[in-house]
Amino acid sequence: MRWSRPRHYLLPSLILFTLSTGTLAQSAEELLKEINARKERINQFRALLNDPDQSTRLAALDVMLKSDDLAMKEVAYGIGFNSADDAMRALALKGKFRDVTVLPFKLTAGETETEGEKGTLQKLANSYSFKLGEFHEDTGRFTFSGGDYPPTKYDGQISGTGLEFQSRYCQGYFNLGDSANLIGELRCSGAFEGTYNATARLQ
Image (cartoon, rainbow, N blue to C red; front, side, top):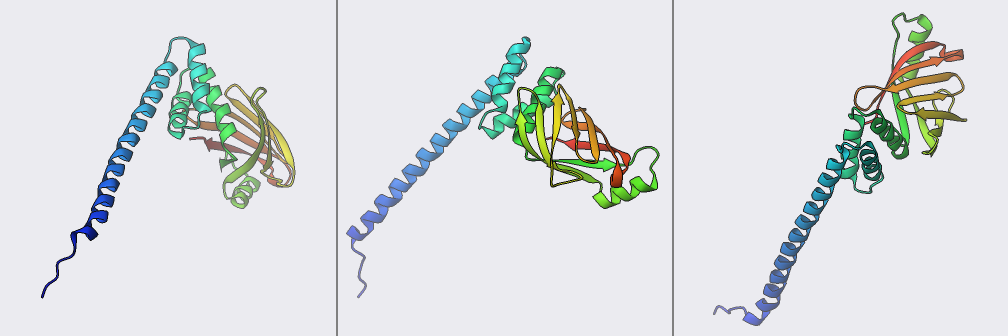
């Protein structure tokens, strides 16, 4: 004889399924609402970044760069670094130094490469990087360690869209080139003797 399953055993499962479906629908609706709110907020700030008034643009960019919203921050960097306004680009450069911990540079030989420079590039694997320490946003001064002599901390300076630093053996001189690229040269002495072209991609 075939026994049918009592219906009262099915009732709790049915209730749970209904509640789960309702919760998922509510969660999806809330998520969509949150997405639309974030999108609207980003679009509002994006419009402010194109405002004719420079002070409005800079204030909006500063707020976006300090936002906890990663999407908003990436939009800010994209517009800031590609702006025709050097003040906007300088603010984006400072913002990046506030956010990153390691700055890597790609090294290449100059027009007339010496044997010593060739050896140094091979030893460094065409790379020079340092770990950022303190960064003083008001003055643009920063500290770093690593580079050609890791044990010691050194100083660097951001001025507008320019960057300079000095470690034990090397001095770096850079300017913000097209988009988010620092372009310049590394001038070294001692065991790293030579002048090397260097670039760092910031975004």
